[in-house]
Length: 94
Image (cartoon, rainbow, N blue to C red; front, side, top):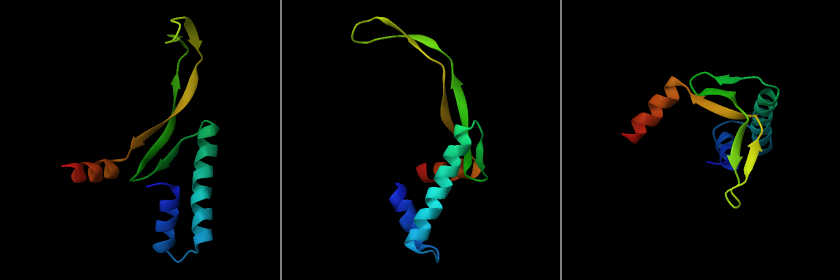
């Protein structure tokens, strides 16, 4: 499922117009990006939590030349699924 599929599903399963459904999805995504961008955490009960994990600076290798390259520290988004989501996914896999 991609963003346009999500908008279509919201439009079909609610009384929102397609434009309102698109605005709602965009608002949710932008709010989550803003929160994570400012170092916050987003938790949706029953679904999961988005947070940031820090990757420390390290020395890597350029695969083409073998030269040592310093890779700076950075934050990466991390998703931890909630109990209900894990249960539903595992039920469908079995």
